[in-house]
Amino acid sequence: MCKESDEHTTTNGSSPRTSGSSGGSGSATVPPTVPKPSAAYIGRGRNGSSPSIKDPAVQNDVKASGTTGMDGQTPMTDDMLSGGPQQTCRSVRYFFATKVPWRARVLTLALIVGLLCGVVASLYELVMDYVIEKVWTEGGPAVMEAVAPDAPKWLFILCTCTLLGGVVGALIHLLGEPLANLPGVVMAAHRDGLLGHQEAPAMAAISIASITGAGSLGPEAPLVSIGGGLASFISLYVDLSEAETLFVTMCGMGAGLAAFFGEPIGGALFACEVIHRHGLEYYEAVVPTVVAGLACNWSFRILSNLPQEAIWTFAAEEPLEPWTSVLGLVWGVLGGGLGWCWMRGTRFLRSRVVAPCGLGPRHIVKGLLGGLLIGSIGALHPETLFWGEFEAQRIISRGEAPLPHAWPAVGALGAYSLEEPLVLLSIGLFKLLAISITVLAGHRGGFIFPFMFAGLSIGSAVAIAANATRGPLHDLLSPAAAALSCACAINVACTRTVLATPIVLSALSGRPDVLPTLLVASLTALYVAGDETIIVAARKRWLRTELDGCEILEDPTPPMARSRPRVRPSRISTPGAGGPAAPSWVKACLL
Image (cartoon, rainbow, N blue to C red; front, side, top):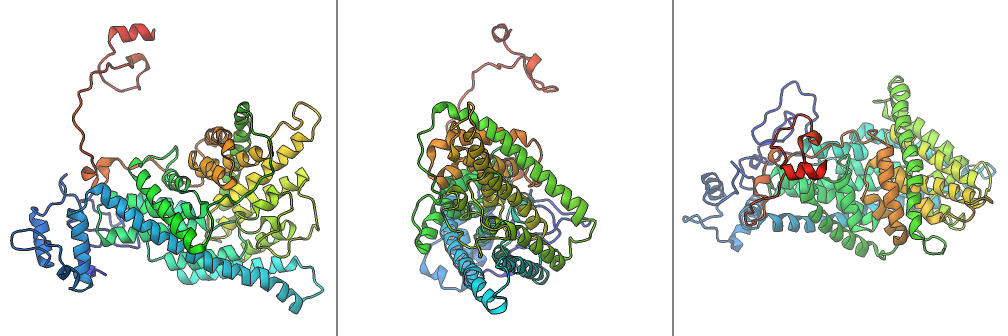
């Protein structure tokens, strides 16, 4: 590891938007937990030019490290790697800064980040599955038999969720608060251009405790945070520019999503879209993020011995007619409205209940209360427990598939049929409530799969009820298209991932024929939700002139003289914008 003297660490909390900016002493911005890369080091662009061995600053720094000869040329020999960790670090930095073209540099690091994130994801899943199995699958029957053999079995759900909710609060109190799920990750990505790697152990421990406590948050957001932190650490190790650090960090964010979605393109697009309000804007990061997603998906599935296949199986049905894509408008309005209500309701509970009661910093009390409420909902509907990725198959199969994690599978309401629309509607609405409680209780995890589970339940309920009528809707709706479209609309309304969510859902279900309907529902939900968002930090990109190092991220292209006319006359141009008037023939065509 490089010595601290190699990095010019700033702790004033300023946002590293320009290399010469300085933070104000009165700023309340929380400083990142990792050092920012040095603006004077060889990996950074300076004064709009690419780092070069001819630069005196580079020569002085490289000569001080003993990696160059008297003529300024650098023999990349084995001696460079035999001088200890500091020598190796400087050699790697110099090699990537001066010998590797920028696009190859970013793609190489994206590949490395993806492979490492696959290892991290497999270890995370291994520990998570082991803990869940010991606590629920094996521990549930054993504890109830030893402690209260005659008591209702659903009491185990209530007690376990409450106890583990307190454990989550205690871990947050002891280890500190990691990033606040996806909203916190998006905030750090925009504000600091990187994610902290030092809080990865705390995030892993707290999120696994949250998931084991059957909260309605999943492992995808912790892996986004951990993968992004790992990518930021690697970027700082080789001292990339600010722009390249941000793009490689996005590779780490998308890699974990690609592994758990099993869809590299969807996971990559999700990471690129979720940090903005209306689609991806950092186009420079798309291809590297896909490379990282492919590498992570490959290493994760090989290490976990998982096949590349869909995780949900719908009943066979006739191929969808082309006109059914129009029904995506209906599902988009329904799911988008539900997502809007969820966001407003969660914000209302935070401002009118959590804040006035002073529960914000009282992590243990908040965790116990949240666990009690989560357990109460789970005792009524055990299907609402956990994050819903595998529990969704029970909804899809109408109760034929078993619950993979929760014990017991029958709650306080007794056995009920998942063919009943009201039961499915109740499960979906209670799931949305459980997501709000889990978020407000301070648990760590992702709400992507929980939203999908709620949408699958509600969409299935509407499809079953509509198909049971004797009017024109009899057997008209596809249960798969209805469930997936409603799931898509809710998730898009809350995360604003208008392209990634349809792709991911079509891959998870193995139903590419539903993709057009999903896209219509996604676009509709995006505008139904309006400006309402749970990820408040999502914003427009930093311009290339505002990101240090973007001046070298150019591909050589021959100059081209533009000769096309201006087609916007002044009467329809942007108010206040100047510019030459349109030619007369253009005006005549537009009149």
